[in-house]
Length: 237
Image (cartoon, one colour):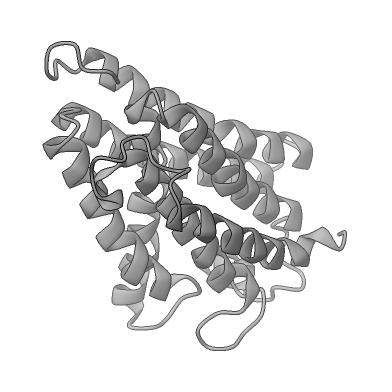
């Protein structure tokens, strides 16, 4: 483990403060004639900021005051009661989160200015991740690290973004459904690759590499669906 293993949630939170300033200005807007919450590019930035805050609850300090709590929760879910001896690599946790937000967020913002479907694609991650937190919380009637921000940030922001994609951008129901499907695929690949590692089928380096490629796959799924979606004549995807 390096210092970055435990420092990245705090670095992300500092970067999130800078992102918040950009969101308050006009740089992250593709259309200044409409309010910011009607702009998919701005929403991709807002989604990235929301996920940075969510990551801090998971891996910085959670709502119960515990530090770096999510790995222990994941270990327990997979049957490893002792986080100290749990075989889930710390590098896996870092790779998943850096790729999902620090890579996918800027890509969605950078490419989403001309291709709104790619701005929407970022929401493949939070729209499904909220279910991954909220479902177990309801079933166990207990808090899990990340559940608060998943409910308060991901749920309303994802629903609103899907509404904007349908009502203003006319991306089509197929593209919105594909966004959720891409999130399901992303989480399946994430957990499937982790299980493959735990069973000795792949090494730690391959496991971490898969996490960096995973968000790119999700984006490709959404964009491919948008290209096939009829939508309005001449609409850009």
